[in-house]
Length: 91
Image (tube, rainbow, N blue to C red; front, side):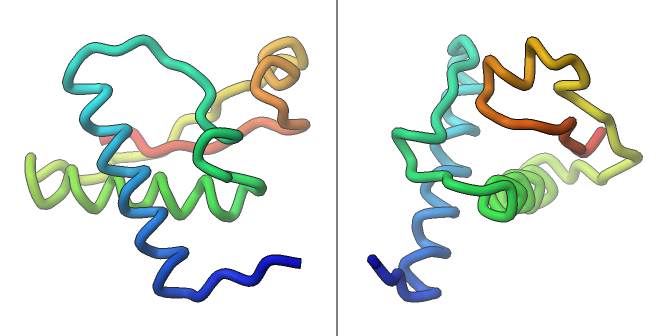
């Protein structure tokens, strides 16, 4: 079993958040990054989402105004390799 230090885990989360922001700014098409970035559970994915929102708040003074529910169909869940809908911020 591989154990990751909390500092290393946080650095990986921050690096992934930065990569997502750069790809979004460049207009790149959505792609699954879970295998590439070692995102193995929803807890990690939500931590990355929090890091993205934190960066947007700092850079663009964006504030969360609500939430959205995504991946509500079984077909979309299967495509993304999950088994339930997800929540995301509306800024």
